[in-house]
Amino acid sequence: MIIIDLLFCLVLVAAGFMAMFTRNLLSSAVLVGVVSLMVSYLFLRMSAPDVAMTEAAIGAGLTTVIFLIAVRRTEEEES
Image (tube, rainbow, N blue to C red):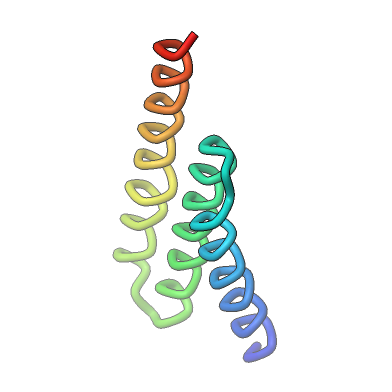
């Protein structure tokens, strides 16, 4: 099980760096959602299911949708 946790941590760090350094805002918003999902899994592994569900709903779900709407509206304003 530790190997799976380390794999999730590796994906978390990689997605975080990719979100910081990518030039495409849409990809960056999706990668931030991936980071939130990985953090949610780690909270679940630490026996905090209430925090994991909140992180998944707010961090991965709602925040990612708000970012995607903001990116779409920004692109509409530019054209």
